[in-house]
Length: 124
Image 1 (cartoon, helix red, strand yellow):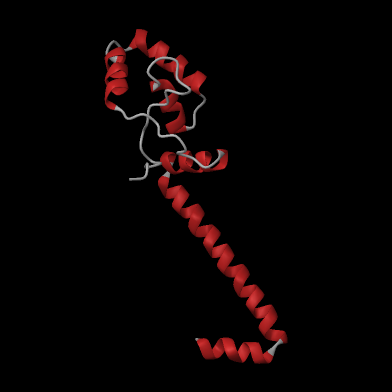
Image 2: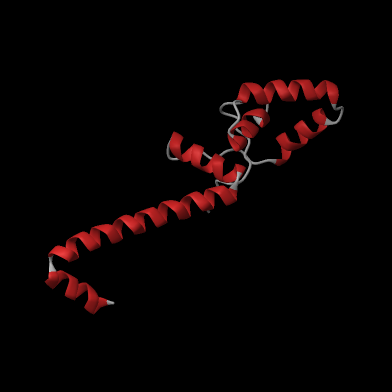
């Protein structure tokens, strides 16, 4: 079974204690320093944060090695988790652009080569 890239994982490799803050940072794309600062402040403001921290540390799965191919892949999946609708819209837009460019190339080559244009029309 392959690892899901949209799931929350503990990041013990980059974590200080249990990997919860590093996992939140990886999941959201926020710098881990800011997540740790927010977590530290919330320990004093909200009493149950410490309990939630330990519960997440015990319940959540560890981040599988090789979850992302590279840094761009990691940024893409963080964007998907942050706003799936926007990510879908962006992918659709890229495909529309590719389709338009391919149509332009087809038009360019078929306008100069009538035999090729006839072959393409026969395939439709």
